[in-house]
Length: 418
Image 1: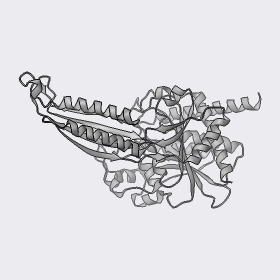
Image 2: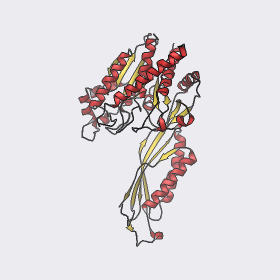
Image 3: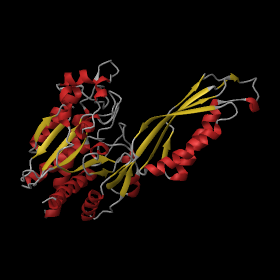
Image 4: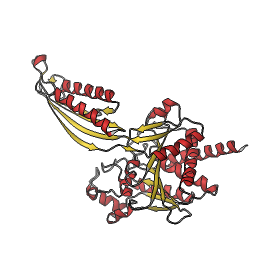
């Protein structure tokens, strides 16, 4: 077997081990038969312990911080050279897939294990972080793990409560963390060289392009609204069509208006939830509420589209219809650093693949870490673009290619910061 064949065999074996580890973590769930692992639960503690074991086997020094993040450090050979961060999240949504977030923790561990076996060393520290909470499923606030690392933790979050009335502060203490020491998680004042996150795409672009890997150019900024549409309920048989103030008809027009504005401006906009009252077949709807989620990698473009939408909604407010909107979420777009994109392009070209750069429409821990250092992301193709779903799937071949690419990226970093 020649050297390229040996390397391919090695990466495929490593990929098989990573996928098996993903299967093992999927069994650590609070809901039998489903992947459901939430922040500061017994299953989270079991997950951290197992991931720490794999980190140690890869030659990393492990610790769990006061926010519940599990961290593994490979010390560099040059004191004071700084730290390069790598990470993703270990929590899940209810009834999740096995790879969202998880792959981005386990694959870098495996890559460092391979490089350690080859006696590769680095002048700088490498720190892999398994973020404790990205999804926000338990306490309703997302990115808690990476916000602690970034030093942007809000003390008001300690009072957040889960569905059982347990506060975040209580849950931290039960987990073995000290809420009073949460600031010790922050890396904001450290010498950080950058951050790289591997993640399944959660979309269909790579699959449509026939590519296993993609370079994230930017993480979309999102704004979310609740829109109330007030009309006048009435008898379905006695109120003439021309004299109605039908809230549901106005809502339908609003949804079409949103779709048209999104297409016009090249952004994505989604009405994901709708409610209608009184909800009887023989009553004209008197009130509706819809949600609006609008995103783009360009905040200015997104806001121009939003202005079109809001102006259009104002025009609908006639004939007895009243519309009121309230913003409930706003996050800026986060561009990935050009030098990290360029580094990943070199790696992908070394593998004789097309270096496709694409937008991430979903939020990631990289958004928070970008507050304290340069950040970049590498996307991995997922079957059908499906995520947050038990049907989430990646292949052994794509995983093997990603291991190869990640090892090459680390060696590129070694050259850059030598």
